[in-house]
Length: 246
Image (cartoon, rainbow, N blue to C red; front, side, top):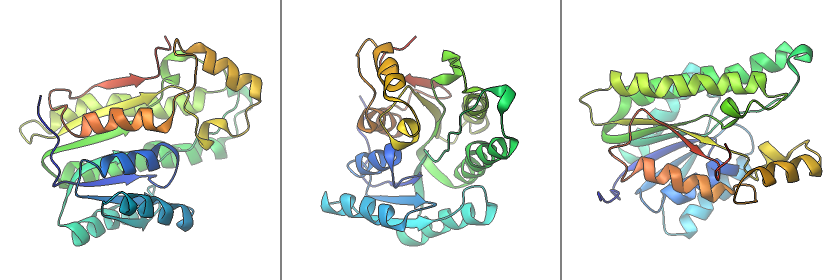
């Protein structure tokens, strides 16, 4: 098996919390540096950087709106200025606003599309232009695209766009030795998932998995690290990381 290179630079969008923070810390074990992107709390971003540095890694935090083309370009510029280039891009940034379709607030719909679709495409476009040979691009979908859960129609639609992107971009980057894959987590114990849900709904989703628990951010981070490192023969795929939920 090919070993992960340790001289690489990773950008993690949404890298200050939940899956993003766990991924930033996990990638710091395999990469020489991590750029932690955030859009909200500077304190959480600083904590993510500190956790990487405490573990012996190198990191910087960069604030930006991934729905803004200039901010996304600046994110990659700052990574290049600080560390010389970019090898791994992991796009965990996303928002989830749930509603029955009949009651959907289209302001919420537009907000999700700005982050989950426009933002992800802007980040991926820069990644396609700038990631160095031997690198990896990892986007995020969700297992809700095939679980057909009520209230998830608008959110699932934004994530289905990510599943369509990976195999196409993988072919567009043919010959550049850059892999493009998508991770589709099931229910994971993060604020994004837990917020606003009654305990019985959370317990029900935990029981859906043969593992009889929710996923942890670290579970997903391990999948990302594999795709970003040694998994050079996995390309253009959607990986359902959900503990066995059908």
